[in-house]
Length: 429
Ligand code: URA
Image (cartoon, rainbow, N blue to C red; front, side, top):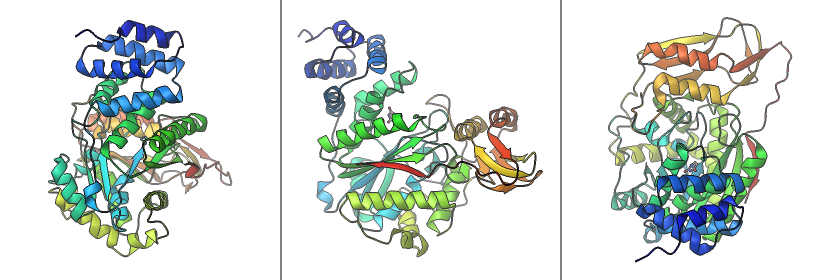
């Protein structure tokens, strides 16, 4: 059977700033998934979309075509509401780890399909894999059983979910087309809608460590995703949150698990606790279970109990010691004063160079590698005091990591007041 369209015509339409029809969009996504539209043709189309944009209708059709490329999951048999959270990615963003068990405490099931890190941002699965025995891949039946019995699951998305996105995301990664708002929005929302969650809270990061460097772009991305969710019947809200500086005091896999466990034990850095609580409140509200004392579940042990059951259900040992890197090196404050800036992107690159992240999808990561911070913007520091500790199993990486951090922080004279943006910048939904 002949093809309904010619890929070159579709590319030219978008190149010339005209709107694609629904039929053209459905065809191009399907034909690309089948291998009929070639990689170089899809890459030209992705670049035309990046340069010329898409209308709301085009984005909605593009998203539903990506959903239709694979299976759709359903949690209707569970008999309880479901809520998921998605972060657009940042440095030190371990919030999913304490958040999923915390929300489960309140009878809302959390089906959290997560990814691995690429580039300077960490991946939730890489972090959890530093727990001895823990298993990222579950069958759909195992996932459903765990949601029923434990209430929270964090696992890898199966290959059947939005396969068009898997192919397209890998292509965008190597063609300079990741940053197109219509493509980011449709990529994220196709997976979340196909996953079948009833409610979704989006954490759209803004700042040097995020995809979106300025609030206007982040707001447009958030609005686009909230509209796509609403169109698909998923109750969706978005928070715009600060990613100028890392979240918490750690960036790196086992380091971040350790900090998450501190939060679940009722301690941990205030920014991680506050964002975890705020996102949990938004998820419970969106799932129709709002108005609960969420913070209490972190201090009275209920969230920790749910965490231990969640880890054990995936063969992890919640009591096993976490891996520790073989070597450390400290970075000292060069002078007395106030730490006014600490750049998230630089810390992310340093953690990546130390071995916490990967340059290519197939690279291994070091469980113990990363950056530990001893001060955050606003803190008073003394010359010679430790500002950061670098962790790695491969000490030849220290120099490159230190290179990334050379311009990463500013220490101003005593009395300086740093301009600290709020943790939550805006809410859309
Ligand atoms: N995360 C995704 O899943 N897709 C994108 O395009 C960007 C971030």
